[in-house]
Amino acid sequence: MARHQMLKLPEVLEEINMSRAAFYRMRARGQAPRLVKLPNGHLRVRRSDLDDWLNGHAAAY
Image 1 (cartoon, helix red, strand yellow):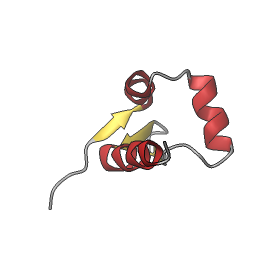
Image 2 (tube, one colour):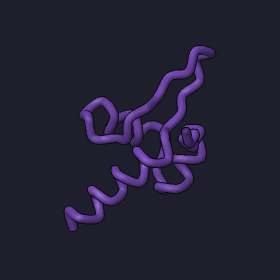
Image 3 (cartoon, helix red, strand yellow):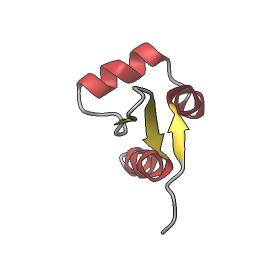
Image 4 (tube, one colour):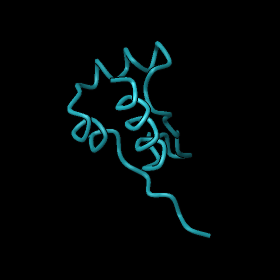
């Protein structure tokens, strides 16, 4: 079984060129990629979730 690549939030923010505050505003509106909270409390985004999210936004334009 293949492991999903998990990205740290700063990596995601850099890739999508967005501030942390803007990301959390989008998240509050249910418009951001899904975050996964690890048992140690750290947040990650699956690469596949980010790619799906990006593809969905590209299709909207």
